[in-house]
Image 1 (cartoon, rainbow, N blue to C red):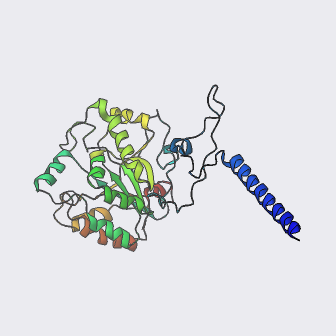
Image 2: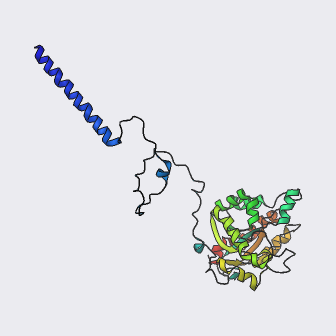
Length: 319
């Protein structure tokens, strides 16, 4: 009886030993080591792309499987995707003289409300010295947002740099389009409302720089451009040929800069506006203090005439 018990125990111990050895072999084959401490993973190997097929280079490493995590939401995740410049409204073939438009087709009932956001070195100096409170009229933006009114904003680069959060707010609104109004609102011709003149050799880069500044904000980007004071000549248009854009003037100039009352602004707009019109207004509060008071009356007058504001791209396309 004792011999039988001894034989059973010996078999049990032998089997256990064989199982333990098998586990150890499997562990070594899988991990390459019997150590309980995992080997360090080089973060460069994990994140860098493999260079497969490089002569003389190491074989591609098998990437480590990361722990499941909740991905961080990108700041631009909800923004409108940015198409290439050639796909944007107003884009033309680079190297050709840009077309100049003053209005859209005179059919239908659409009109474009456009707002220039000027910023010069003198204006920046006024802000720093306390001589001006703001060149960003939030009341205009709030009214357009509240009433769901489409609009197109011609932004200077220096205005974007001064008001980045408001620029982002404009870009985030799907009813608003963003366009280019130079970097520092310098004149492209002589005798343009007393504006300092931009040297001819800097014209192309001035406008290109502003497109680059506006680009990261996303939203409804365009290749529309407006000259300060609507002042341009053949040399100025030739300077912009490499940029593949459309120059936008306007057939309804509101006269809102430096106006001291809102009624003349309303009369200037409603007396000239027609289907396809491009209305020129300003967002620069200090220099156009009456625009926000005139805007509700302009919108009411457009409704009375059966006219409907639309983004500039839709107006120029004829709706």
